[in-house]
Image (cartoon, rainbow over the protein chains, first blue to last red):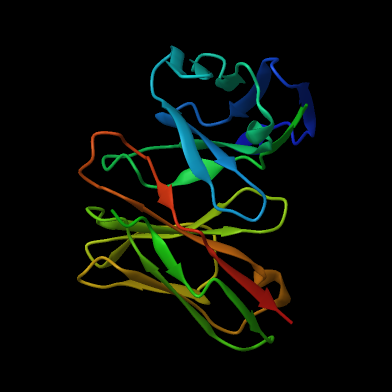
Length: 114
Length: 115
């Protein structure tokens, strides 16, 4: 079983609709969870972080965390063509320092259709 | 405020050669991590440096080594290159004393091609 699993996609969503991206993780001790956006040929860019159960909203983005189900999701409302990218879920298994290392999923490729 | 900078951006090597990649962290950051991202995959953790010491290491062979300098910049060295080492090498910096645990800021990467 992979430590962090994502559906590789591609996921196609019409412009203006809600894009829903999902991620599961295997380590129950995981402390911190992140969504990164990566455009083709570019480096990952942090778009959301979440540390406790529930929802966290930032503009058009909402991250959802359910530690009991070991599940993290990202919702993108009012999807725009510029949202077309690969979305990487990352999990920090944590330690005293809190930022030891991130384990990434393979990413979900999202395409927004105009 | 300068972000994470990496050099070189692209390089081509042949099997058996050695390569050194360089990274300067974001201003105010003291911790540098290196990741390898193969095509179509997520980044994989190589190692992390803090206070000039390797703090944690991922599942990479000893051919991969690194260094952190007093100004927090870092180098990644790979010896005896294999074709499978072809990848995007990402440097990420963070602040060990920061309140937002685990937030990494990535540089644009060094794309290594091994022929």
